[in-house]
Structures are given as structure tokens and as C-alpha cells.
Length: 308
Image: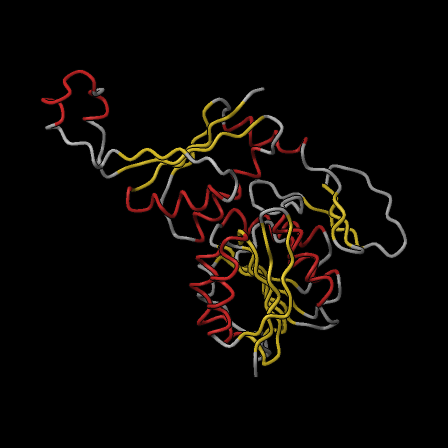
């Protein structure tokens, strides 16, 4: 079996957060931190210590995971990149064993037609699909943005959205990636949808996908989470989705309610099950009541209602 090393190079001060992000994908994370290596050790251990380690930049470190050829390498990288940007971590992603051009297109062989929930079907733009009665077909080309519908967190959010969205709802998706959740909401009858993402490439992809699906009531903006988000026509959002990461959801918790009407719904995911209670406690402390929690493998998504 062939394995590809995915290595994130970052400041030593960010290693803990980068490791947490990568551990969402694989349990075994290799960490390189040379900040504790002292040149005085050379006199003690002599040539037992590689001189390259002694001369390494002590302010920089790295985290690596190894991805088998059976996995969707591109989606792994998209996930890491999106979470790094959401966490405002300045880092470089390096793949060892596969060049960038190869993984940038190889993901297509893993991206197939995917049913989500009861009636939504995600279809890659290059595949033909015969729609069945009652289905809502979403035509997607995620490009280099995260969100194909195959990842557990996307499926969890989409399913909760399908179950709880009401016709005419105003919907906000924070960290919108490929735009998949906002597009699903639009196609299911939302009155207006707004997606925000910090990555300009993602925003361009979102707009293209919205156009492809005829979502004339959907806007996408480049924004650092909630900064610059405004309500349309004074109408606060009825439903908000945030498929990001636990730390970012916690960071947004004090502010997100200000964009929502009383009784509005919040769907959060990108949460590993071990951190569910932490996110739950913070949201409850900021005026949200838990409605339900859904699980898929090691991931969970929570549905919350804003208390009026």
C-alpha cells in the first residue's frame, strides 16, 4: 500500500492547535519540535545528535499524518487548509510522495454521487445522474474548496438542515467552503442564503456552484467568520450552520446569537465526539438550548435553539 505524508509546517506556538486539527483525521500525528534542543547537548552526546537538528530553526515545527492510497487525499488537505484558515494559523501544507498537481485532480475518482438525508443527492458536475421523483439534486464541483458531501461532518449538517429548514427561512453558513450547505438550503426553499469564507478561492467556487444550481437568492462573501456579516433587509437569520471546528465554534459562541432571531436554529459540526460536551457547555452558557445531537463515526453535529 502507498502512503502519502501530509505535513503542516507552522510556528512552534501553533503546534498544539495544528496537531488537534490533524488528529480529527488520523489518530497518529507526528510532531516535530526542535525548540528544546540545546546546542550544549553536543558536548554531552557528541555526534549522536544530528547537526541538522541542532541548526534547525527553533521557532518552527511541523505536524504530519500519513494518508493511505485508499483515502481521498485531496479532501484531507482541503479539510486541514479550511481549519487552519478558520483558526487564523499561518502554515504551509506539504505533501511528500505526491506532487500538488496530482492530488489537486486525483480527488475526482473518490467523489461520486452521494445521497444525503431523505431527498438530497449531491452529484459531481462531470457525472450524469437520472433524477428520481421527490429528489433534490445538487450539482457540485468543489474544486479546491472543502465540502463535497462525502465527509461525515458535511453529511451531518446537511441532514439536520434538511430536517429543520422551513420554506422562506433566512440562512447563514459560516465557513462555507464549497458553498454546499447554503446551496442545499436554497434548493430546499430558503428565502435567502448567505455564505462566508475567509478564502477567496472558496468564495469564487461557491459563486460558481450557486450559479450552476440556479440559486439566485444566495450570496457569498469573503469574511473572517462573522466579521462584516450583515442581515438582509433587517431580517435576522432563522437558521445558521457552522461546519468548522470546536475551537472556532467556541470562539464564535458569544457573538453568533446576535445575528439570529429568537427561536432560531444553530447547526454546528466539525466536532470530534470527545469535545462535544465542551462545545455544548459553551453554547448553553450563551443562550442556546440543545435540541438534538447526531453522530457519524468519530464526529458529531449539534442542533441548538436560540432562547428568546
